[in-house]
Image (cartoon, rainbow, N blue to C red; front, side, top):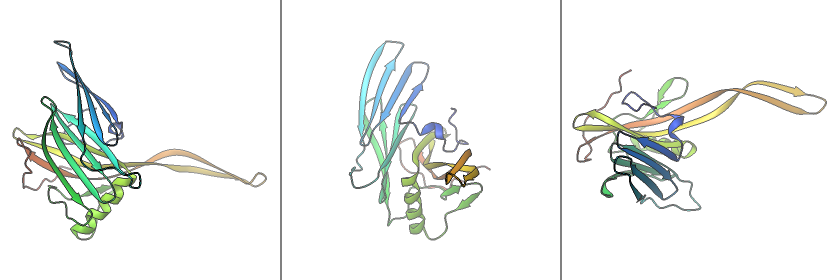
Length: 217
């Protein structure tokens, strides 16, 4: 799948195991509840490396959590959320260096977002209310969906991240009922997709750039 600033969240990115490749390096990532494990193979010099990056948002058996990751160039973006918080972290894979983190809680506004929160079902609508209520709605949506983060260059000195979730469900297209057996039969031929997301702009030092991003229609 091609990643660029026009792309939105995709069911192809839901997988907790992803393979990335370039002219020299292959990355295989495996996400579990607390870590992103990265296997790095340089097929020019035949060097194999293993990396593990911990997500600092604590997990609990009593709280539902969602997590995912994405590699852009030699950077790993890691995201994790529960009903109360969301945490985004960035790492340099080359030296295992932690670079920056951003997060928010249910009672906060999302200070580091550079756009409105987009919500799409069949047609695009926006979360209504003040910033705090929008945060609550976003976290509630993320917990029922598959959380994702995507990155690409915005221009030569900035990168843009898409943070959000995609929720897929099957919609019954037909229904029959057998009166003799009292059995309902449903046929599913359509998948409904819901998405909620916002954009974040970072400079080359991973500082949040304070400007408004408006997606081209």
